[in-house]
Length: 200
Image (cartoon, rainbow, N blue to C red; front, side, top):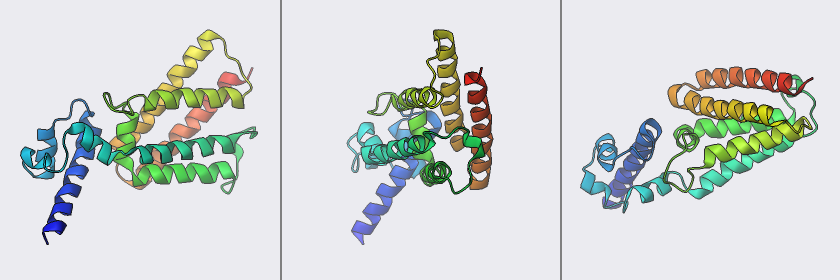
């Protein structure tokens, strides 16, 4: 019975940490706020986690980040050689992998929110910017483009806004249907904009 209670408390602390990290950012979140959200004493948290860094690593392990990165890479690979992604059938590999990425993000919504908000002071603080650079590289390769500096600057800003918008959608919307509709609208806008940017 004691072990069950211990597991229950640990799970409550981790769930509270994710919620507070997603809402306030990792750096601004305090152990006291997490304790309050978990309905435990601050001292009790330290029975399970040595410090905030250990708690962060428990709720966003490297294995989770690696899985998300792998799914994103596979999605980009599936777009290779496709002239217009907007015209693909629902059963096309790119569409199926896009659904897999979205389903993963829905299943781990708050974890993805924390990653996309650039969690300062953690091993993953550069995740969002690295994703931006990865997507830019994929887009320029897809369109066989070598953009001039002004276009490259615009492209970086567009992708930073895109990644930020994905994080905000996942943070502020909770219903799966709403998230799917917002992500689909963002994707349509983004793909249309990319085509216009790279088409003479």
